[in-house]
Picture 1 (cartoon, rainbow, N blue to C red):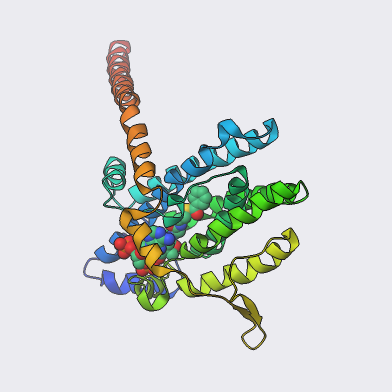
Picture 2 (cartoon, protein in one colour):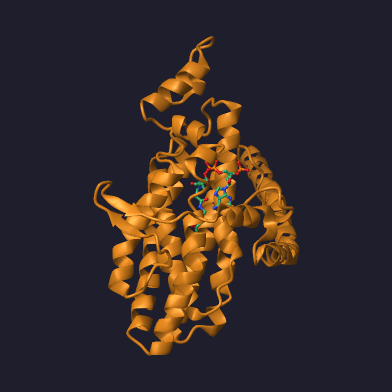
Length: 331
Ligand code: BYC
């Protein structure tokens, strides 16, 4: 339903509320409260930045992949992440955001990206664990976003989730292969799981009681579940996968609670998360510096693309004018 079609004088805010209440989508030309627009830009931009920065930890392993097969898989995965970033920047543009400005905000630290990508990928087992756990957490968080109330974001998420599913499986398959290898390979996998487990739980955001945005985002049906519910769902989904793989999740408090029908688990180190989000994680400076270098290095490509588009537009205009003049002569 497009509220811009509404009769003059109609209460646009009430119509926005009705669209949300009926579980319909808000589309780019619809009227929306400025706070809704700002929230969507904030979340989609942060998500887009995460995809683009998220190319770095795994991208570092493309030249060192142990076989042609692993290299081809990794290359495809990292390219998918670039594609996800592009869909998401486009979704942000439908809200009036400017892509160059979004990149500037990322590079200058004024917009966030997921804390998880500020941890290093130290061995090739990390590539598998990123696929299994990081992409697994991303799926848990993003499948409900396919039903988000903002149309372009919801539609982008459908394709992204399909690709994330392949990413998760390739990670798990890589780890299965390593776990059936040597004792050294199994130790590498366990070490990677030990390092990534807690940072992955941070991906879901702070506990709901401390989350600044959850209540409003749930009322607007941007978020369909709270951060804690999705974190719990991820833990419950992952425990049997860890058992099948033969690794131990590094949490002594992790155990099945029959009463709740869910796993109990230990407290995330929220101080560490705050530090990482504030820019003080192990790789924050390196990740942003590399993104800035890539952006600066691409300046000539952007300039050439703009010059090329201007030339094409000029030629099209000249051809149109020549056509009109020709028609005039023929008549
Ligand atoms: N890291 O009120 P809250 C991927 C911020 S891409 C950093 O709960 P919200 C992948 C939050 O922004 C993974 N910051 O916020 C890519 C807020 O600060 P501001 C990215 C975090 O938005 C490549 C403040 O803390 N996924 O999976 O309601 C390869 C309070 O939080 C984090 C998405 O972006 C964090 N972990 O909920 C492989 C999914 N958590 O902005 C994989 C879409 C929270 O008020 N995003 N903050 O200054 C979301 O679902 C939500 O934005 C979040 C946070 C659940 C992340």
